[in-house]
Amino acid sequence: MRADEWWNLAAVAWLVACGGQASAPTSGADDDMRASTGLSSDGGAHFNAHDDFQGCPEETPEFGPGLRAEGNHFGISVVAATPTEPERYINHWTVEVYALDASHLAEVEIVRGETFMPIHGHDGRVQPQMTALKELGRFEVDRLNFTMRGPWEVRFWLGSASLEDYVVFEVCVAR
Image 1: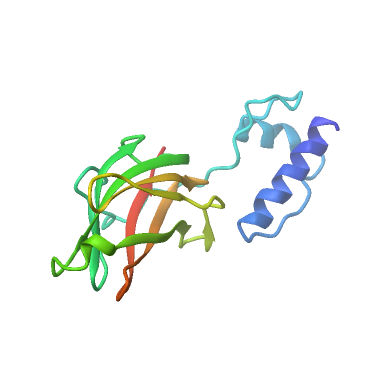
Image 2: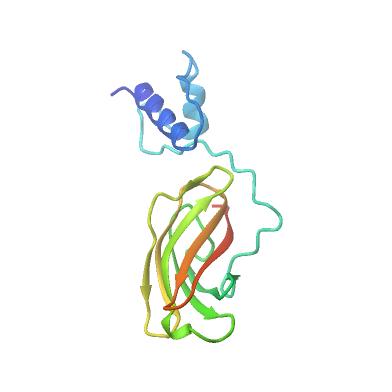
């Protein structure tokens, strides 16, 4: 496949995935698109998808250990993260779940998680994996995937024998 054919296919796939409408580049526009995306004329491996990052809303909380989000019955606190600030692609968090009324903690689990980008209406396309740790209420959350820079939500569904809850972190993926 020629580099310009590959580029057209990649651009259409990206636009469709993000809900846009795609049209093939006009003749002569290929070099401009390659320059703006990092795609070499030989279709080289340093391809970077178009990035329209405009920053995150001012009210997005600063990310770091101790960041909390609460639902109706439970809350979650970030204990550690790799990388230390959310970045594009795969991230790993250690979190601690707590009960708002100090009960039901022994039986709580993270049932499901997802990353979601509200401004584009898509998820991170990878299902995070939760692993309970030895410490009561602590979980490893692996495979948090942010496919692009911008404002994201990290959503968790929690459950115990008698309660269900939903907790959302707002994070900015700037790198």
